[in-house]
Amino acid sequence: MAYEYLITEITEQRVGLIRLNRPKALNALSPELMAELGEALMAFDADPNVGCLVLTGNERAFAAGADIKAMAQATTVDMLNNDLIARWETINHLQKPIVAAVSGFCLGGGCELAMACDIIVASESAVFGQPEINLGIIPGFGGTQRLTRTVGKYLAMEMVLTDRRLTAQEALALGLVNHVYPVETYLDEALKLAARIAAQAPLAVRLAKEAVRKALELSLSEGLTFERRLFQMLFASADQKEGMAAFIEKRKPQWQGR
Ligand code: CAA
Image 1 (cartoon, rainbow, N blue to C red):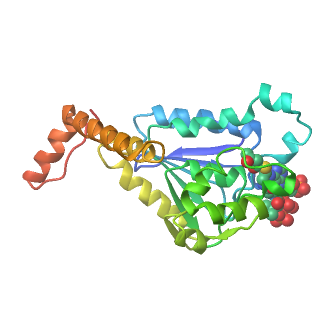
Image 2: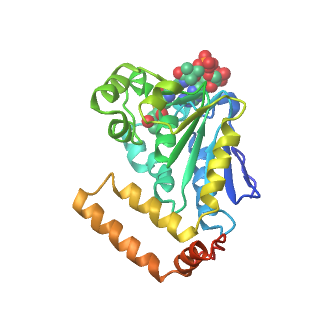
Image 3: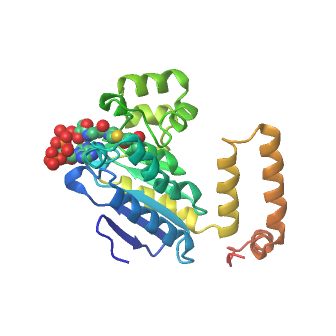
């Protein structure tokens, strides 16, 4: 499908790649772009030829936030009635893992979008921040919640209150990103990581993602029970039989996704 604000492709390694494509606006996340992103995410999530997704921007900007020009004149009633952010929720409901490949500005809604992904690969030039306070607002898509759970209350507070930004290396040290690579290779490395995931048993990948994400929401005992049920459930899959047979027979497994 052709999009106006995205470029999409499926690689030979079963990776669904989505590039945000509003370079002149530093990939500001306009309602139109986010509507297309929701469609592209759902299409790849439903496509059996895709095992893992990668979301990226360009070298200069992953995304510089929600589109300020599109919401500058909005009233509270507009924001409630058109709940623009509700349309961003699609990324929270994906069954397949999604890797954010981040370079340059990753600010406001851009940082929140990256944090909604499952793994973050950054280039050395990536800059993470929540600058909404400069606009007289606060983050609206998880910037006060996911950031705090990852970097802790004190640093999150400073970032949200003062627009303190993190370099890629700082984000790496804090566990906000998985890897940092040179600008020339970060996207290839993100695609390689996604390809490794896409080569695994699809049902196990899906349930593993679900279980890890639940760890942020459930108590430990609820989370352990949830994990145990998913673990037990996988013993009904052909891929569990194949994976264990392949180990015993010292060969590579052939996954069927069922
Ligand atoms: N919305 C709309 N347009 C944006 C934008 C945004 N978030 N960020 C950048 N742009 C546009 C600029 O208006 C400019 O367009 P024009 O050439 O038409 O003027 C173009 O992108 C290039 O930007 P700059 O000239 O400002 O580039 P720079 O290199 O001097 O600065 C920057 C880069 C520091 C990222 C700066 O653009 C900036 O501060 N952007 C805004 C960042 C921000 O506040 N993000 C939070 C948005 S609110 C939000 O995201 C809410 C939420 O939680 C969901």
